[in-house]
Image (cartoon, rainbow, N blue to C red; front, top):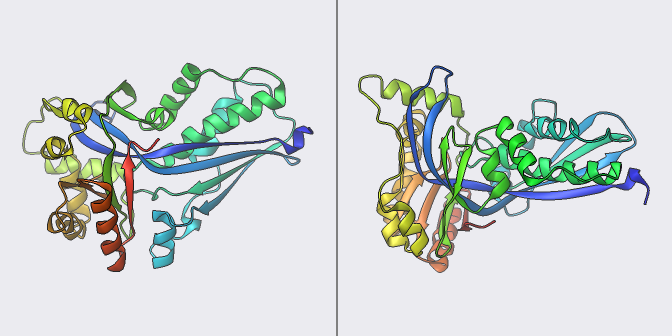
Amino acid sequence: MSTMMLTEQAQAPGKVNLFFAAGPPRPDGYHDVASLYCAVGTTETVTATLTAGTGITVGVAAVPGSLVAQQIALGSFRLDAVPTDDSNLVVRAARAVLGHLPALPGGLHLQIDKAVPVAGGMGGGSADAAAALVAVNRLAARAGGVPGLDDDALLRLAAGLGADVPFALTGGAAVGTGTGARLRPAAVGAPLHLVLVAAEAGLSTPAVYAELDRLRAAGGVPAPGLPEGLEHALAAGAPEELAPLLANDLQPAALSLAPQLAPVLAAGAAAGALASFVSGSGPTVAHLLADADAAEDLADRLRARGAPALAVRAPGH
């Protein structure tokens, strides 16, 4: 096969934070966190293709039926909001890999098929970066006729790209500490059934953290940690036990910046959701339901009201 026809594809999941605690700001501007990550059944796909040109190019498309596709149909999102220049994290990911492997005999095109909302608190950009690491690693190894980087090397590169990228690379469920990049796998007894609701506009993660610090300015902040029983409930596959333990320190800040999320959260309780919460820095809202039928029913009702909604399993990757 000609090297100019080489292509490799990889997927990485979006995530929700079933629990998220943030400590006070550190001198470097980051916050220590304690997070229970859970991958969801909506994935980003990156296809890496060797081209006859030079440099790295990026293309973007929406996955049919995804939250992103629903946002586009409702006019609340445009694909041209996704950068296709060097500021896209997939370009940084590709260059990180290529710095450790033989130079490509041509250019590189990265096609992103987006399913995870942009700036939605679900780690979509991190998933893109993780998928790019894997796809470019495979492509460059094939093109150069050499072994690719191993999983540990990819995880080290992922940690240098962003706090959520290592989890996007591993998937499943995990406890994240430090900035969130230090991971420990968490056991899941049975899949959770969630309904994800995308917002009309995204939220900047730095802005949400800044608002968190502003709201907390008057009092002390404890060191972050997971509540007792949280991991046990997840491992037992008991959503009713898990629900009252779900919490997100960033949720008050997200609601302060986007008060329109309050009725979205309330809609879950009105529909019998076991819990409703903002995922990460928001503004995506997740509703935890007892089973798949209840999740599909709520997603159908929310879509009928004009909200981008999707029933998913977690972990879904």
